[in-house]
Length: 180
Image (cartoon, rainbow, N blue to C red; front, side, top):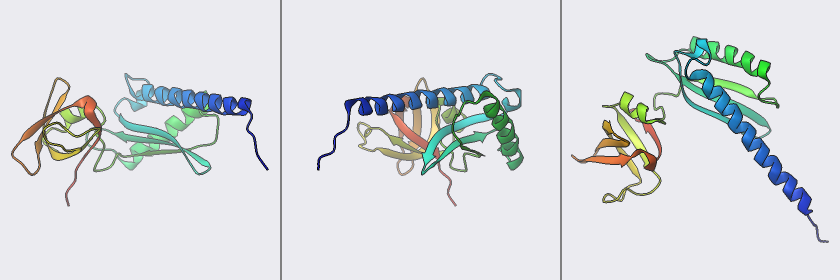
């Protein structure tokens, strides 16, 4: 027995995914704006390090990773969670049930923006590149952040007495390294 899929069903599924992707982008942009430029007064002392809206199994999660100068406490996470939860419920941005999680980015926090590299100059970092760096052939670089010049991050390599300059747009991901 053969089974057939109507072209209209495929079109509907594709359009639904497109709408959901647009809604997700709008939700993330709206929440990001709350933390920038005094969008929500209570959030002005916090830095939104990362945000994700993901589906795991049948459950949807909205996860925020937040930091502040001097580190973030449990009380900070509770305050943000309560205030943000009220705002999201009031604006009804997320139409489905979801779990809101607010936490610290952790001791090996990701470095997402150029200003993160400036802030953490002198600290050890692991940088993953989209493609190997010319001349070194490495896609993963571990070293100390020396400086940021224009849009290049300068890192002193861990196992060599050499400083490499990495264009920021070539960095796929990066995080601080904590050694025990």
